[in-house]
Image (cartoon, rainbow, N blue to C red; front, side):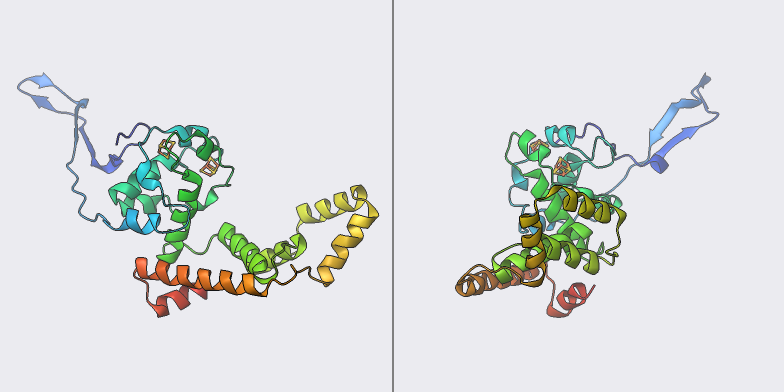
Length: 253
Ligand code: SF4
Ligand code: SF4
């Protein structure tokens, strides 16, 4: 698996002598550059298996490192450190410490799926980014990212009612992520909607805030979904070797 745009040589391992003469030949400066050997001893051989066991990470093994995902990526265009191809390489190699250097930006994936469209191997790089962010959180390397708080609130509402009420999803997200409802962008969006939407639709939206819509006869579907989710949670925690206490600690933040 080639590495094109990221170097694994750490700057502190590059040694140069300002003044060095060997056998009468001046090899000072970059002529004397050498790289100190580096032995990686802390491979996490389970990392690919663990991340591929989380939703979205299933096809990571297909990656052939072409770089099309990174080339197409919306976030990479703004920050070249955001590099799905490179992270997939590190995960498959088990280089956990290298991955952890970027742990605070992996969650920034905006799910635009340009990478997914560009990928010739159907790896689903967007899913791998989500699975990796989730893995980082489950392993205690990062707090729960806002994108995951949003996804959980969204799913919870679908599981409960079989429907989505946008206002509730938004309020729930802002409250759980510790943000106030008094966001300037939200206020301007609400005023924009009030001006543009027909009265009937506004009334429907207002009523849905107080009387939450539900899918009729949703009970059986809900029970089946909850059973499935519970099974998947157990599988996930077994795969990552997390015990019940760790699971509870993480759920409580
Ligand atoms: S889905 Fe995420 S990783 Fe893929 S192109 Fe968009 S921002 Fe980049
Ligand atoms: S586009 Fe697909 S195959 Fe190519 S590096 Fe990205 S994930 Fe791997």
